[in-house]
Image (cartoon, rainbow, N blue to C red; front, side, top):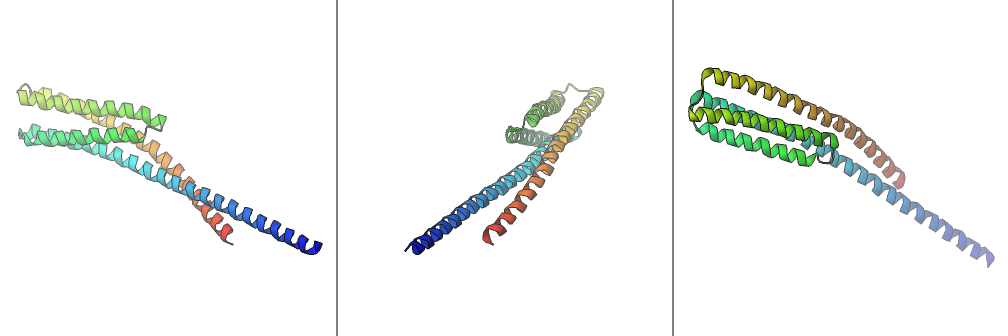
Length: 193
């Protein structure tokens, strides 16, 4: 009788040990899966931020191109195209700043970006308004275009800095994701072996 109690106790202890191992492995596997999923989210997020930077710059360039077309032709249809470009730039800049609100470096960069986009758009708008009022001369237009180039160069340089920051994050997050995937698959193999 003591032998059967001893066998039952061993079986119970073995069953308990196996159950603890299975529960721990399940938790560990789930935790690793969540790490992979979170890293994938941040990889996607970083790519979206870079895309919003590109779209912001594209909106400003569309507004700039429409302004130039208006200056060359006097066709007011280009003013409507300008407004669309302006709105696109401001919309993407706003979305970008919302997306990076968790990153203090990019929050500071967004403040600068907002000012640079605003300055460039205001500069473009002012020249359109001057031409529409008829209060422009070739010298004023040439001077204004030169200032516009300086503003645009500053905007492009700042966007490049922001992209560089995001590229660093992308490299870091890519490595973290690679490591998390490796750990997940290793854990999967070990828990099913």
